[in-house]
Amino acid sequence: MGRIFHRYILKEVLTSWLVVTGALLVILLTNQATAVLSRAAENQFPREVVFQLIGLGTLQNLSVLMPVGLLLAVVIAFGRLYHENEMTAAQACGVGPRAVYAPVLGFAFVVAALVAWLTLELGPGAMARTAYLRQRALHAGQFAPIAPGRFRTFGGGDTVVYAQETASDGTLRRVFVRSRRGKRLEVALAQRARHEVSADGMTHTVTLYDGERYEGVPGSAEYRIMRFAENVIPVRVPDAGGGDMRLDGLPTGELLASRDPARRAELHWRLALPVMAVVLTLVAVPLSRLRPRQGRYARIWLAVLIYFVYSNLASAGRIWLARGVLPEWLGLWWVHAAVLLLATLVVPGPGWFARWRRRWLEARP
Image 1 (tube, rainbow, N blue to C red):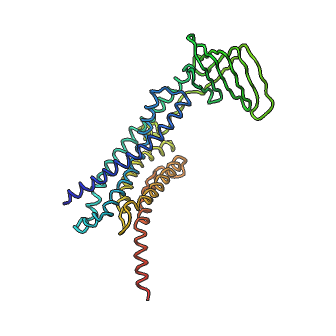
Image 2 (cartoon, one colour):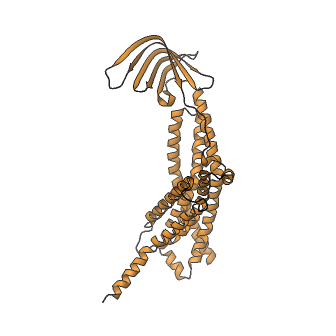
Image 3 (cartoon, helix red, strand yellow):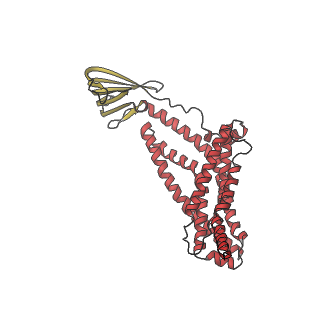
């Protein structure tokens, strides 16, 4: 009977985990796609890079989704078992806590191993690949020609260029240019223009021919209109260099060899996520226990609250480690201990209070 019960519990938890994690992943993909598409439109990323950035961003965030998905999956699965009295029947047949925890913790250790693989190996590699693709896309966007019928921004959005048509020799036809210099706004209209890029891709030169330029401060009556035969507009674009690699893109081996507080804090954060999966499972099993006539999803809000406190404590501890407020040997282990202690007080707390109140009422004359 023990093996049958173990397989049944494992099936319930695994099914719930796949559904919950899948739903969270869809939400993450939607937000990730929106952010990447917005950045790609602003910086003229090539199309082939966009889907790679979305996939890499999702891979980096999976290590955070999997523990919270496990917490919610255990609460939902056991909530159904308690709600439909299956756990009551199993306990009446002699099923003890060990038989309940064994399959769940076994699955939790498998998830923790996957999270460790993501945080220690795949995640940093994905972050480094993301930084490389963004740098390459920015560089390619700097050299891209102005496409007809599309607005093109330069200089961080200070200059906007639009051309209605492009001739076979590269000449732009019916061109609109809007540029901002401090509070002053300049708008130029020209019949034709030439677009040139410097060898390093850092300076774009738009030369307008046969047009008009309007200059002034928005909201002010002071402005001037000039006609020109030729008007040269140089635009300096931001540096596309990647700079120093972010901490979450550094290999784990490099973090292990470093004594820098910020890098050690990053290492402890990576180690904390797999432990978080196991701790949340230990909390979720007693948390999912329902009282009679209580809904199967009655404990979801408490699970979300515990995870919110857990993740914020871990984030705060990470910052304190980086700033040297906490000793490096303490790491984030105190966060796991604090959450277990908090769960010990919160989860059975209402039951303890109800029993104490009932005894107090019974003792009254």
